[in-house]
View 1 (cartoon, helix red, strand yellow):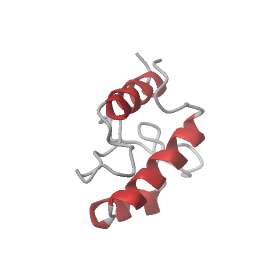
View 2 (cartoon, helix red, strand yellow):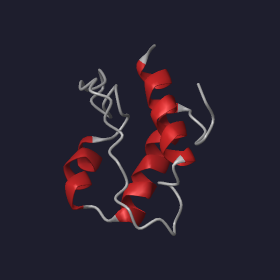
View 3 (tube, rainbow, N blue to C red):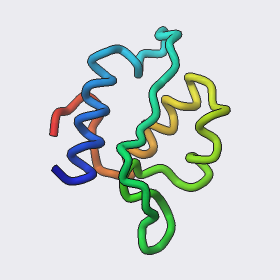
Length: 85
């Protein structure tokens, strides 16, 4: 399975568990899939598709910001949330 498939699978699982729902008060899990390397142009991680700024911000981000980061990285990866790979 490639990084996009792993990330899509993780997003689908988290969506099914309700982590992307605005009403969910539980912490939004990290998109990290342990494929930690930057793209050749250094615009994003090739595993989780987060930018360096998003990676740095993650530990301090609240739920709405984390959901926003997830939405942006899924868009970057060309993945629709909740759609299995």
